[in-house]
Length: 287
Image (cartoon, rainbow, N blue to C red; front, side, top):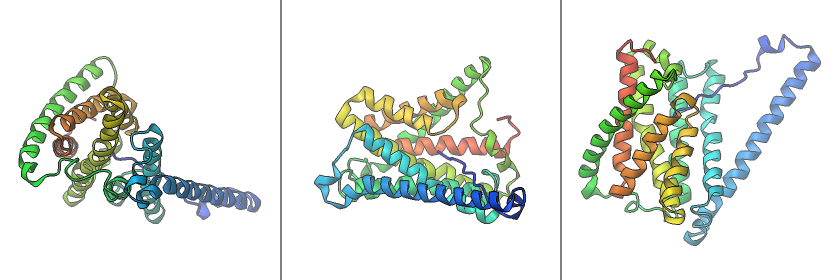
């Protein structure tokens, strides 16, 4: 899940369009907006993270509830946009069409996903390495299963996208990333590392490791599969790709339940993302 961030940089060119009084009003409005967002992050952060520092019993508070899942996700989205906003302000970047912008966006999301899952659930013992299926003796088997699942996901996704395009629904997952084709090879490798390898691991840790598992334990399989996959698909902010992403999430949820490990979904997810980036970079295939 890679999201772009856009920032309004208030510089002389922008302020010159307004009178002095209007310019002051713009600065005050943006300042109040920033303060409001910081207060929101602080409030959400306290609500989500504080129980994780009060002992294991308190850390179980809200586990499996829609409210906690949505609060965690909202906090991740807010925190994940801080990095891209700073990069946009420093480099005057727009969207993801630069190596600093893309890597900042991807790594900000990755760190937010991993950091929240660790501090709120892994650190206090609500989630353990065994429950996540990160046992050393099974890593090879689970990685192999992940490769097979990844190949299967690529085939299924291609079929679904072909059907959708035949119905006139143009897939746009990589449209905003076409500029990656202009990156040097080192920049492309940075994209693959951040978006093709680290991002899938972070997303699977959160969505399958926490969200899916918490729902599975407290609300049953139907809610676990549907709620996790709908949330995963919606957060990709791509309506034409909603169905393929939804199916991809359902497969990864099944892989976790079947194997008891997030490793297969991590590997399959990484394979899916990396292949997509390689097709984008090394071919002239339309996106």
